[in-house]
Amino acid sequence: MKKGLALLTACLMIGTMAMAQTFTLKSKEIGGQATQKEFANSFGCHGSNISPQLYWENVPAGTQSFAVTIYDKDAPTGSGFWHWVIFNIPANVTELKAGAGDISKSLAPAGSIQSVTDAGAPGYIGPCPPPGAPHEYLITVYALKSKLSLDKNASPAYVGFNLFGNTIAKASIVMYAQQ
Image (cartoon, rainbow, N blue to C red; front, side, top):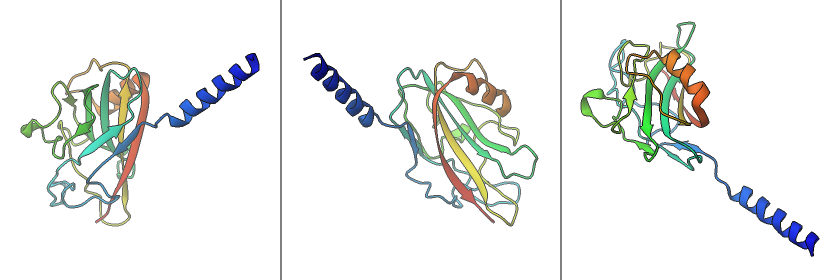
């Protein structure tokens, strides 16, 4: 009897673990390649500079807030380039609308903070890679244990430092851009 109960318990646990879903980032707009819609309208590019629509599923238990970053490791800077840093997104929000990175439109979730990018201003700055090889833009959502005690003047590196110790889980997608 005890062996049968133990076997049943083990099977239920394995079944539950198999059904557990992975924290996942998706977009209804990003299809692998940035379009003129996402491209910057600066640095010699003539895009619309609209941040992409993003959404995430299967939020980990204990999540108190989210952060989203867009990072170009291929930028010719020696340290990459941060294109978007938004944090303190409320835990009940699982989507950023297209254009949420435009501070003037107030489309970002209430209470969220968009800190400075490597362009020196808060909000989204789209891709504008130099002509040649494609650049890889890593878009990441972080499920966090708490809100970050930072403001809009926090540098991307400092936000990243704070994300490191507060992350429960993260999920990423990649967008490529080339001129």
